[in-house]
Length: 313
Length: 312
Image (cartoon, rainbow over all chains, first blue to last red; front, side, top):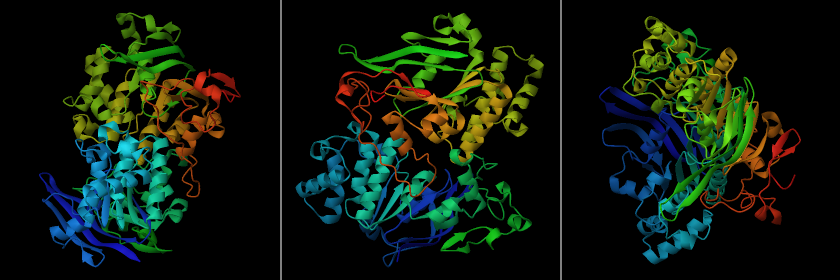
């Protein structure tokens, strides 16, 4: 069952230098009870895609298309309707918890907030629920630590607090933007383990945004790869890892240190001035005449897999 | 080529109630000619401090650094200046290693002028040659750092470092701010340059995959001490110290195997201002014994490498 369906989403920023096409004609489905990885290099538009879903982009952004969620089109819902969705139905776990948490409120109070806002609880009840959320996120002695402020928490503990906050109202969908960025490897695997457990327990779906293929490999059921504002491949994670389709995806896997560390030549194009035809063609070793002139569609490759490449046309 | 003997560095905090942080607590290793030594550990373990102590960008409290037979810890400023071009460093953040108001060619030309390596009239030619060697073109000469990408700036910094023909380079997380495909470009370039110029390298990283690919010998640091050293392949094939084992398990370096599920170690790194007694890892160690709380283990020969653990 499809939980969230994105159709032809465009998110453009108008800047002095030109129009930045951060998300360009993206269509993507997130199913119930699945973790979908959204992978791509910095500046490919993956964070903007997540922010577009919750309508958290600034006013000067042009967002077009359709995002259907439980019978609503999120792009056409009024602000009040959105407020009921944010945090309650769809929660976001941001990267960099230190700047996402309020420095002058205690952790416990911040985790209580969604309970008060969306469940109408009184502070004392909300506090109790917050403490049990912190316990579920494996924060040791949660009743005491709930009274502390974000700066007293370590990076890993802050991320656990963020996760508690995100999961507080049992959202149907969690948008997690680089939740392990900036953490040490041993802490990273603790957080990954925790997210796997909590998300599966609650039968929630998750859109996991990451640039780290190893994190995606551990947590995701399916994966979508973005390049230069577009989705270039959607696939089951297993098929993707064993046999990536799109030349960019093959290059990405091969550039990992343990897969030979073979670089992809060239640089990602600017989102203002994208190449004609296939956006990857200037860096692609399979580029044909057609790739320079025509823009490829997403082609079915079998087993629910789609790739934006003329090799599969 | 380079020998580090028992270097120590303590930082202090506070005026009346002084607190001490033993950032580097007695570390020794050697790096041979054309060899790359990998130093791996989590943030705050002191690995960056080691790199800076070796280059005397910070003064060690005690211990010696011997470079090509010269003990550089006692050198005076003038003598140190003569050795500096032979020992260079690549920082993590290339964008801030370059002067924002200097054009690319000026940044690369500076060391050439400073050490009078090339006659004034040939400088631009030499700069272009260096930039082309690291994969940049003529069009980049007159740009400013903010006009280039992170990967391109790291290439510029590498060109500037190589301008001095160093014999030894400290690479402090040179690619941790870069995307994987760009990381692969920069690391391959470093390998190529090492083949060409034959410098030795201390490669500092928290990324085990990168360490495995780039280095031939390595050391694992935890709270200011080396807990294991050895040939890189041996350490990865057969990690001995429980911390190394945990790092390798959680670093998912076995590849992108979806089935493999690492069991993370418990807890977090203790406060370095107030480190645990005995073995500093005992608070998180799954194989802790009573002895570990009391006595700090020494780094002893085990197999082909060295391990600081009471299990051996």
